[in-house]
Image (tube, rainbow, N blue to C red):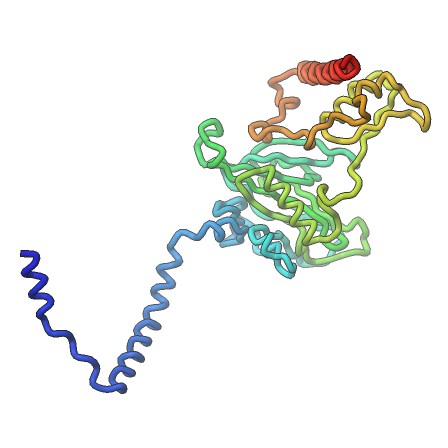
Length: 357
């Protein structure tokens, strides 16, 4: 039966070609008109399709909401808040295609502005590095914008796709970085408000240096790996701003100073070595404590150092074991002191083995 059907179909006459070029041309124009008339409807349908991953990764400001990674980060942003791509006007703008700068405009010029950028959307928890003294920063963790400390210099946020952090997998996490930066003659810092709004303070420190607008005050970026996000964001900013260099491009790395006559010299020296920073042990030129040096420097003159600076694991980024009230401070100090002693013992054993060999 199938063979007979195929034979019957093959025996049917073919459609006649168009009788003239003019007729076919009219049909062609008609088809073009039909396609053009169908385009608005097609575009309208395409707007409902899920955005591409690249589109989702871009920071966007839509209807008063700041979106990162396709998810709301800030809601109810005031109309004076603006957002522009971080790569705009930069030769290597493609590298920063997902990042953006938050800015705002005030009705009058001033040397100090406090701009609200909206409320923090639900589902986010944050880690803040804030300046509590002129030269010192400490971390703080929490949820909600109201608890963000004043003079916050960095805000790292995490969104979990599952109901609870324990049930969520690492792949289901989204991280956002909100970084206040220098913008011309002004500096920016983050803070929370009692109304649960996230604000940034924009100030020059000089009453004669005034402005009405903050253009590139707050850098915003997102990713699925917090460590990679921070590293790539700093590299982006170094290229965009041109006012600093990433640590990989620096010729001289910061060196810690340890006083050899201090009662905790060995403790501090080992801690600095563990952190990946350089160690200098001396009270004055030509005066050295060789008992300390022998415990920190290997026989060949090298220092056993970590490849990278010490950093918390991903599951500890948004918890503070020192200040959470669940662990005693002396227990934390004892644990760290014990680890330092083990480190010094390892140095001594290696020295003994080298000498004995």
